[in-house]
Amino acid sequence: MAVYLDFEEPIKALEEQIEQTKEIGASTEVDMSDKINELEKVLVEKTKEIFSGLTPWQRVQLSRHPDRPYSLAYINAITNNQFQELHGDRSVKDDKAMIGGFGLLDGQTVMFIGQQKGINTKMRQYRNFGMPNPEGYRKALRLMKLAEKFNKPIVTFIDTPGAFPGLEAEERGQGEAIARNIYEMMRLKVPVICIIIGEGASGGALGIGVGDKVVMLENTWYSVISPESCSSILWRSWDFKEKAADALKLTSTDMKKNGLVDDVIMEPLNGAHRNQEEMFSIVKNAIKGYLAELEPQAPEKRIEDRIEKFNKMGVWQ
Image 1: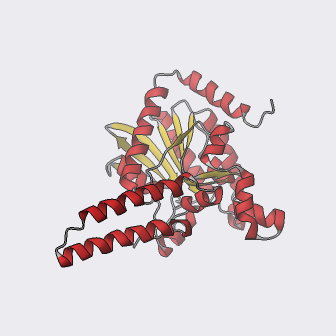
Image 2: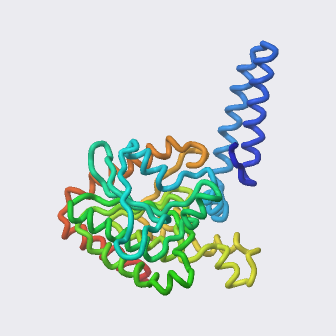
Image 3: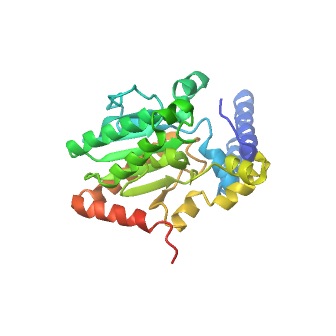
């Protein structure tokens, strides 16, 4: 059963009205096609109206929508299920919140890496709610180095509420693991594409977020802190999360405007959570386009441009 957010209620009401009209037509054998067409046009217009005027907080809500596809869904769709997952950091254990492995993108071998959330309560616990431990980031780095060894491009999918902040994670070097990944990703000789498909929170996102192309889906966010945490720090309450979301400038539009991401991938009219197959196709075509642009470049040129891009961030002109 589809889940609707508060601001999607008018869409839900229209969809239910269309279904009821179809049922009446089927049961009474009365031609209701004109009425249905009229309602469908109203539905499209109402959807455009709602999704064209979303607030930053509403986009945050969309990024967390339970029906929104996660990393494995994108990878399996893009590779047509020709994906071989690889496990373990060769030191501690396999972190289920970080997935990665080789997959075929229309015959081309690509290393796919991403944070993975769960689709139900049991899976969310298994995946640690998409919050990787240090061994997750070390696994990601091991796979990146493997891709570099065999000269294969890397695509990362970012969707995390943050790196796991537990005591055990800190004891095993959470900060060092993320910092090491940032340092090493700057110097990778192969093309690196980073796509924010949901939440892009703090260092947890940056740990696999350094690339030649860093792009966001339309209804995602990327920030040093979540709106709720920002609100609780500044106003000692979560009640001001909408105000915090506005102030943080965390939407894809704001991030592109401020030069912190390279591109924004537009979602289907009613969001990735309502039309997953179309979203998979859009992302796949975007990846192919970025690879076609990056692969002809010399590795030294890519590394130089990558370092220069990140060095420019935050510089006051």
